[in-house]
Image (cartoon, rainbow, N blue to C red):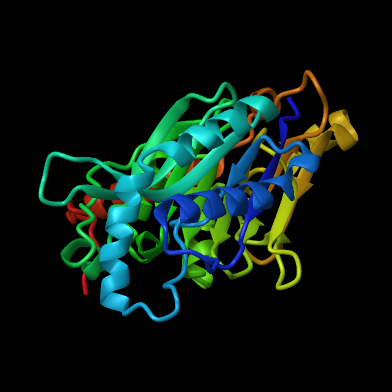
Amino acid sequence: MSEYRKISTLCPAQPNVSSRSFADIKAEMSGWIRMNIDRVLPDSPDLIVLPECSSRYNCPAGVKYDDYKQQLKDYYRYVGDEFTQMLSRIAAENNTIIAYSAIRVVDGSDKPFRNSTVYIGRRGEVIGIYDKNYLVIEENTVSDIAYGERAELVDLGFAKAATAICFDLNFDELLENYAAMRPKLVVFSSMYHGGIRQAIWAYQCRSYLVSSTKGLPGAILDPFGRTIAAATNYLPYVTARVNFDFALCHLDHNWERLAAAKRKYGSALKVDDPGYIGYVLLSSEQEGLCVDEIIDEFGIERLDDYFARSVSARTSSLAARGLADGGIKA
């Protein structure tokens, strides 16, 4: 059935602070985070995404950058999980989910920090944590952040989400890992934009993607990689409605089936064709009607089932010619 949810992304630039006292900095950063979240709460979002290292401040004037790096380690230890607790209260008070991307402390090794996205559920509980897998090298060697070791989907209730942080977006191994899991949403928190890589991730995962990029225009993309809504230089935040009751199918062999489904269901079935790539996005626009039921009713072949059938046909044909491995030779 129609499964619309509101997704908000926050993309403010990293702030300056007026004090060097950790107590004062914590208070300033708490106010800054709360101020930015307050900008989207009137939209009643189901998910709010914060940018990478969202509780970090700019290097204070007069402080050497190397000293600032050490100062940040002490600051992270000082604040502990207090920002997570604050966001837990906000999530519970507003019946929303918050994806909080920040450095967290995990003692017990020579690399006691993690660059993480912590998912806080509607009751204020932690429902998932992702640790950045592909660190910029200096994050590990200088900032003592340990590499993440896992990449799993987080169940948001309305969708299962994949997570990537900044430099992660460059690595196809992580993308392929997620693509095989078929998420319905990719949550990307970052200090760099990623450019075309955002669209590639949405396209390959067959999912929506929300990017929260610090000081840069984050956006919500559809499974074709098209921008649905984007923050701007004037308004560093945006909210969009997304229908998570969707499926992708190729037009090959489905023309008549799609036409028959459209004749029966009319505007209750949306067929979104981006053009030029040969497949469409189906979604239900009616309560009580699920797109999967329509697909089953009319025998519509899903996109990846068609691609898998095409690979199988090639492999069988090559095997019949004695080329059993089915590989492509250079």
